Image (cartoon, rainbow, N blue to C red; front, side):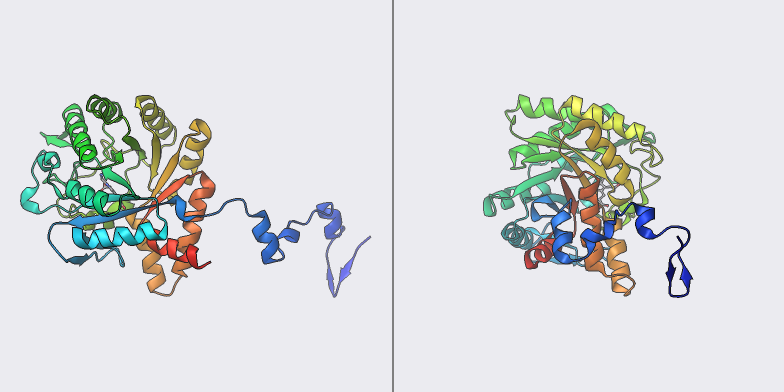
Length: 344
Ligand code: PBG
């Protein structure tokens, strides 16, 4: 029988006939029922906070493309990390901006026990022993050309880079890193780092591999932060994954796990939710995403223009990364979102 709604005719069947009386809106009708059926939650325990460190004292440098993010001297960085630990953030990830005169063709300053990255680990380990320290084992902040590997005759040479990164990883472990995170995408670096760590008594130091790092335009603001933007010639397509590829990402993750990675990461985050889900389903290992600088900048910029609610977009983007299968997320929003979660 036809039903009439005011002047409008619904059609041959009523909604209850169409849906078989199944109405998914029932459980969405109130806050209490929405909370009850919520499948994924964002917690402070999911957060890793990337920070930028520089030499000197009492200096906080703005990064134009990352409003609210600063390069910090260690005295200030330690205070902020203390604050992060108080908020309950489990771990930080440190990235250095190295003075230009210390950068060279091979990134040799990464092998200096007193480079700012190692000094940061020592200072943070001392002052905030409860927080996890993740160090970036990659050459790009240290090379005069901004590439993640040693550049010879226009080629990023794999094996020589791997040897240097493995040595740097041991130095990072010796200076207090709990987790070493190679972000360079050279072949064989995870296995070489594992061997080197074990040979030097650092069996307890874990490896978070940037297993699937894609050649991406979303890294732009980070390159301003670490000062590689003006140096980088060409692109990183000979070592990062083509962002058109997904099977290749599975192979990369599989390889890194076989070589001894304890945790894998997908980078960037939001445009790569399908990769996160594939890896989580395929390997069932601790899986992370890096919500990168460009993702941060987009949310901040649109928020500053009044085009979106930046706080809500921040929360939504992180929760969606969890829904896709992440156990945790590296995000520049970490302290902001930790405060927001605390206020809830
Ligand atoms: C390079 C590195 C990159 C990022 C961290 N380490 C990418 C790059 O410069 O090519 C990006 C982080 C971000 O965009 O937030 N080893």
